[in-house]
Amino acid sequence: MEWLNLDDSVNQLSLIGAAVIILATLVVVAMMFAQMKVKRDTAELTEHNWDGIGEYKNPVPVGWLVIFFLTIVWMLWYFLLGYPLNSYSQVGEYNEEVSAHNAKFQQRFQDMSQEDKIAMGQNLFLVQCAPCHGITGDGINGKAQNLSGFWGTEEAIKDVVINGTQGNSPLQAMSKAADLGLTSEEDINAVVAYVAERLSALKKTKNPNLASYGELVYQDYCVACHQLDGTSRVDGSEPMAGDLTKYGSGAFTIDILNRGKDGFIGSMPKFDENLLNDIQKEAVSEYVNSLTRGQ
Image (cartoon, rainbow, N blue to C red; front, side):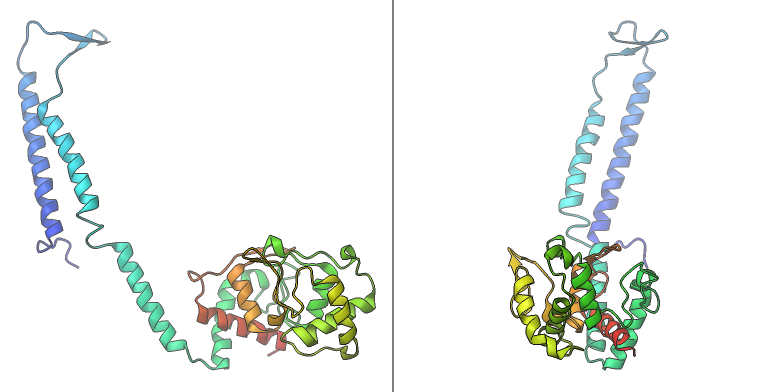
């Protein structure tokens, strides 16, 4: 890389300006030294005095004032007309390189097979998720959610119903079943069966005979935050609950990656595009679902 490109007009003007400033500085310094050599018999002193050494009330040198104002003019030109706003920008070059890389990434991996998505998701999981969830997704003895064979299952739905959840935002916090007045084991099993079989992406339950009764329990205890179809009610622009229709699918995992999650154990950050792009989020969701399926 050529460190000094004289074909660049910005570099040329910068060198000319620097030369003018250096020359003016030398002239002013020479004039001040010349004045110091002139002995004066009478002169007015300032009120300041340091160990008997006084200071003359001399006017500010014209050359100093000229350099001062030229420096201000130079600063305004530098930032408004010269470098970097109307010329090369290191940040701009970085953003262009990132955009070009992302475009190549999207083109290369847009049509991956499920096996390739799981392989990519595993690598991303080990880097971004394993510090809290563990390399096998078991949650490291309760440090984080157990994603291995539990999360995304009917058993996990029952765990949320019984113990509540913090949701993906403060507005989505759900109380424990006992705090809501839902204390019957049969009612709990029924509403879990209904959500798992009729609303969620699981589309199956261990208690199919309870699903119809569970719909009634759901209408009594859940519709304040969830719609009848399992989607979330909305307060302004903020959903009041998780979308039950996505539970058990990769879309539910992607929602959590996008929004983050405050749990009883700790807080999970949101993974925006600076951390994971859409293809990478889909890959992570496929890998997490493979853990639930025991693959």
